[in-house]
Length: 244
Ligand SMILES: [Zn+2]
Image 1 (cartoon, rainbow, N blue to C red):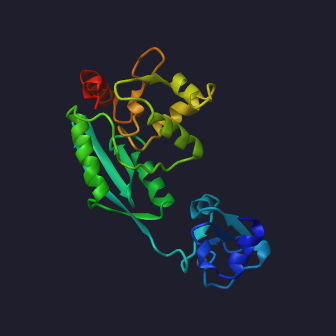
Image 2: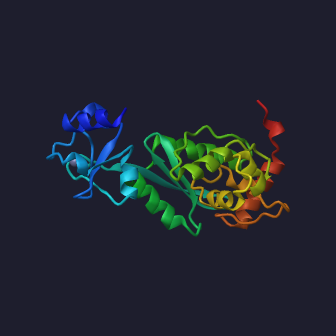
Image 3: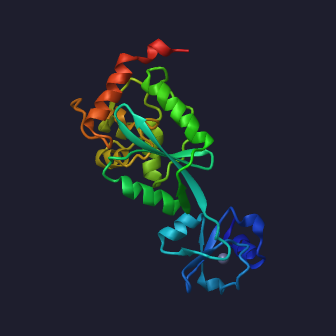
């Protein structure tokens, strides 16, 4: 889709393009969908974005006419044997599984809300119910892989690191340096460690399986005792026992 096609979609208020891109109006600081019924700006004042999130990051506000609806993130607390987790689902995906004692917990919550234009509701959802069921099995040593669809909210780099975590098998650990090599950025050890620390889907995206190159536990959002419990759990129930 080129620039001209997008401009035509805006001029024609073509709703078929609403999910494909949006536009900011430089003079008002508002971001709109192509079909917005409000008066159209001068073309020179239009800035195109793939998603409203990108426009928001550049300081735009959502149009009250065409972007009014808000989404819902369903929340549920989960008491694990090593601390409390806050679970969140957005549409049909898990977007949050975060230790409530984690020091950036509040910031994570606000970032999700802003990026997904969502309000929080403490109610369960099918995804949350299934997550609880699978976490129960995991902590009982009866599950080593999760089958919950995950929504990672973060930068492209963070998502790359978090997706790579999903490839580290149950019962295995890797160092930050190894993780950096796994994403073909061997020199980015510090950035990889930061991204690992910012993971908001604990346990399912197993950041607890990342340890220091000297095999020390280093840090963990849920606290070192929680990290030790998780690694011990996976050692006591090595995954060969559960090969289907
Ligand atoms: Zn609008």
